[in-house]
Image (cartoon, rainbow, N blue to C red; front, top):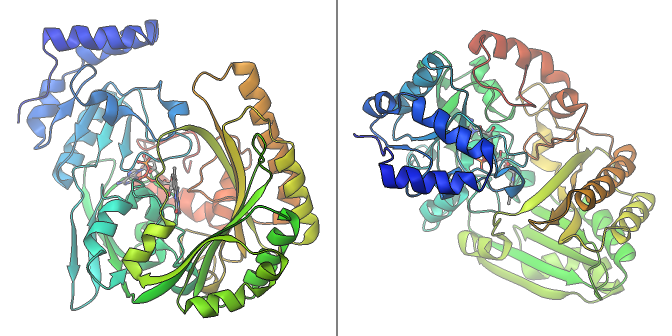
Length: 480
Ligand SMILES: Cc1cc2nc3c(=O)[nH]c(=O)nc-3n(C[C@H](O)[C@H](O)[C@H](O)COP(=O)(O)OP(=O)(O)OC[C@H]3O[C@@H](n4cnc5c(N)ncnc54)[C@H](O)[C@@H]3O)c2cc1C
């Protein structure tokens, strides 16, 4: 297939666009032009998209716009594992750094590069073997593809709430979702995977292969490019879901919810969040939940919070995939940072007071900020930390602070925002006592190797040395 090469007009349009980025942008285009893109295009069944070509801008854009200035010299739109292999080898032959991109939702923009972006988006097929219940999901499929495919079927895997998050990134870094307490993490359903390694070889991982173990939660972008995943699905029927909001007595409501949910059956999956006050509105507490049970059962469980104040919102019982509409989040591209910590102990009144105190101190000019906890435990903790690369098997909650800001925020103001975020983070770490979630990858974390990988770090480092001795796959927080 011919390269989607720049013709002169397109190239000039590209230069005009890049000029807006300043000298760096023009230099990038010049460097891009010097590389043997035609040779890459000849080796792919998919296309090559270069700066200035139609579609390049949208493809290059990461979900976290904070990292949008870093643009790839070229994008290989792969259609097969053979394409991925050819793209890796071309990049290595030409000394071009590479990254894989599936959903593009890395919090720290780690699927952006100034080199070759290997885009998996066209590899998004899903099939289901009805006799075994094993679903094969191509390496570039997103949550939204899974919603569509499974929507008319009564099976699921643990998936995320945002339709544009890639299944690859989700599963490779663990994969939390409302099913995890009842059924385990996304990576816990992974029974096999096809991966393209740094030397271009295509391998199928299954059984007790060390690399399959590593693919269960070490994080994307570390060992190779996974071109397909086989997941053991589970059956789903009707469930009760809720989206409830309290706008008074946030301390009491938050404390009541986390205390009650700590005792909830594993058939209840939830997220409790408190939003920083904005303008005239006070702190709001929200509960998103999924319960394999009835609305009356859910209402009874939340009796304590209802007694403090009646919430606004919905509680409804629906077919599983229809019910997901209540829980989904759009995840539109924005400027943000998020910082996480696993809570290996209960969130007590002292912790709640600290959390709400920091929310009240949130810079008023920021777009939004919230503290949220996803309830973990249940089936997640049935595995030992060493059973999969995902090491966090003793937690009760995954806590996370997010902060959003506008595009043109002056740098001194942004520094002030980020200082608040770090102050808040340091204040909750002593209450949490767990590590950090590698899928909420955090560029400000200093102890990231242990925080993400704990006692699995040494085994992961050994696997990395074996399968990628030249460090072809790397980013700032990659396994060394
Ligand atoms: C709005 C939003 C909602 C989210 N919701 C959830 C949630 O509900 N549950 C949860 O657990 N997490 C959630 N996350 C976090 C998410 O799981 C991680 O950010 C994940 O890494 C994103 O995967 P991706 O494929 O979309 O991102 P990408 O940026 O494409 O990839 C992430 C990393 O994996 C690498 N990579 C990409 N594709 C491949 C591949 N095929 N093979 C090997 N490496 C690859 C990339 O190079 C990069 O290092 C959410 C993130 C956002 C922004």
